[in-house]
Length: 321
Image (cartoon, rainbow, N blue to C red; front, side, top):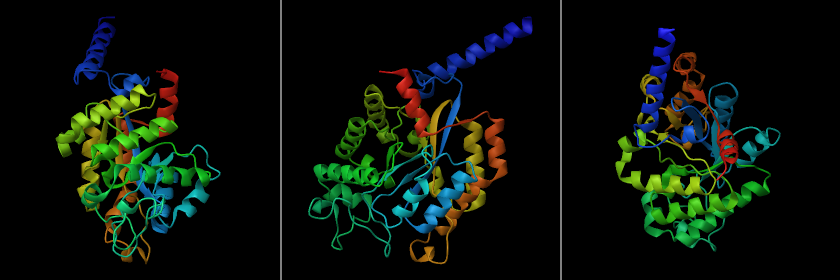
């Protein structure tokens, strides 16, 4: 009896710490999970960018642990992925809203077209090749038009996106872009990738955006959309498989309660991917990470709950405004 009472007290203390350590309940708790629950989205970026990206994304989700992905609508291999998901209504895929075309020989232009969005394109008529040039040149009204054009193309193709997010984080690089991004998501009732909880990884990577991130999250939540507590992007800088695995296992063992999205780029590089990008080996390592039984074992040992954007939206609808 004493032990049961003690365990109850300990559990209560843990819940109290999880709820109050950052001043307020986690978004996981607001969506119905326990205060101590660690909820994770394994998210694969860049579906539709290339055939190899599609193969890697499909394998990471069908055979591995990945729970979500997002599609780059301006890219040439979107149709292949759209055909794959056509008979899979429960699959979790969003739109990787794309305002850059960063590779030298594998490029794309805006879905809206140059006449509609001339400030979004370079001398080749392609989207700018880096975030800084988008911020310097892009008109926010035209950014919004391109966001809407990408969503419209997805809907026209019969896609049912679970969420919106931002390729290369471009839409977070300027508050005017971020405002339009959230505005479109709210208007269409599509969740948007925003994180304003404890933001452990966000603060470590870029503490300057913390206040803005919190405001965006609160706006999304107030409009009836879900929000995250944190986003993990450290893997961008991990190149070898050993480095990726060690970093990922450390993250899993130290992950804080709340909802965290862990972003990957799972690709199965073929003979031609080398002509697109030199990032093939690190993207292949991301795929191997999702197939690694040891990583899966640590997820289970830590009691981490895997989720999707579709589940977040369903829980948010249940909670109500």
